[in-house]
Image (cartoon, rainbow, N blue to C red; front, top):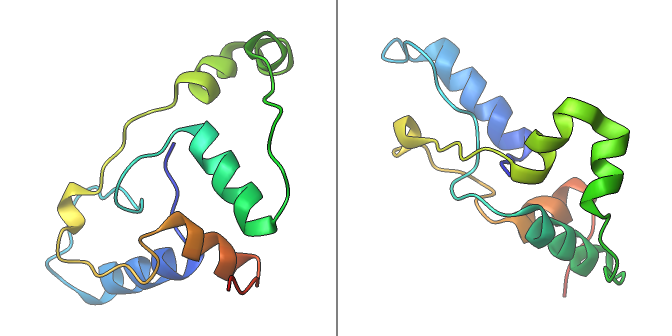
Amino acid sequence: MNWIHVKDLARLLARAVDDESFSGIYNGVAPGNIRNLEFTKTLGRVLKRPTVLAVPAFAIKLLFGDFADELLEGGCVRSLRLCDFEFEYPELDAALSNSLDIENK
């Protein structure tokens, strides 16, 4: 799954408006892809809560129908055109901690 911290996205959008070299389509995603399970475990670690149970695939299919495949399989989106963009939050732990206003010690 892909993610990006809202501050990085805002900086990216501001740069796209100001920088005339930006043209075409850009993927506003943080570097690297992660699996939903890794995201869930990272969120649990940041919140200091256990993440032992996963939602079974059949339940997701039942709830989301055709969209379930996107949730279960995800997409592999990369930000190749942003190789010179300096992300303030390239790591999920720090991005979640900041977004949730949690200080990990």
